[in-house]
Figure 1 (cartoon, rainbow, N blue to C red):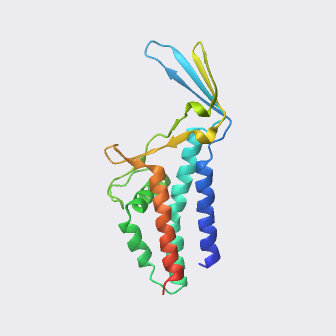
Figure 2 (figure 1 turned 180 degrees about the horizontal axis):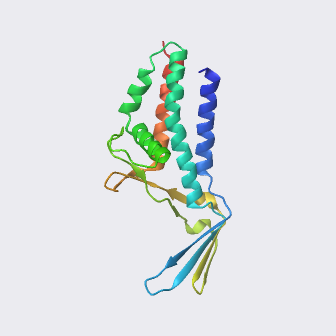
Figure 3 (figure 1 turned 45 degrees about the vertical axis):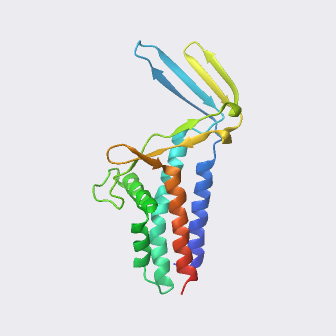
Length: 193
């Protein structure tokens, strides 16, 4: 594993972070069925759907976990102990949760024996759209249409839930802190004797 491959990996992580942060999109819609039998439709224009952002988050989590292997191989390439990478990872709660989420995404089940001991999973993503981001809000019989003029003002959040489905934080915090730790590991590999 050479320095360029590591640089490319971190460039990829940066692109994935940027893609996850992008809010502008086309149109998404959903229906809600009330207990009285009425169905209402909600349409949002000009904003990326929560599912699209969730897909980006999932992709990013898998690459964060894959970075571990890249860094271990790089450590070997420069004559350092790859176990040091593993030791740092196992002590970092953010990377442990990212790793557990990535493994759940890859294998489809939450493992009881995982790095964080939390058996985390991703909750449902959601937007909060401030009034200043709206172009229009139209109410029709059984339909609401929201036109977003400033999509980057919309706040996206996605909780990380523990084995009891209790929120333990937002995935963006785990991603941000996980990548920061990976960068620290990279610097230790590349720049310390």
